[in-house]
Picture (cartoon, rainbow, N blue to C red):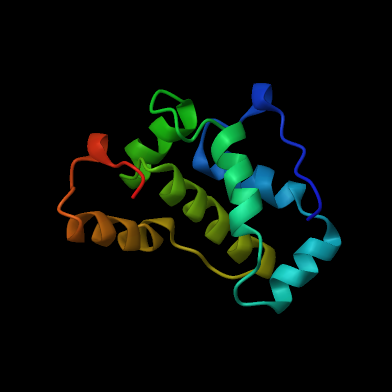
Length: 123
């Protein structure tokens, strides 16, 4: 993926919309790469891009509110991780259970003794 053309004014308002939007941003070449590789290289650059452009660092954004209400996550890295893993599964035609996936984030914060959603800050 050479560039991501995200429109801040058209940011998705739900995680499922974000997954669909992300899938739509990948070229067919990108999708083939994702299908062929277990750990695609897109998390860093593209992840930073969606965290910033889709306001995942802003607790009042509709996308963060959806993540909190439906998946009990609020950290931008966790939200972008969920979006990417779900999108990759969708591209690969694999089943994906978002509620099962977010358990890794819940466990992380539990280990950090920081179970309060409002206090989840970058490490």
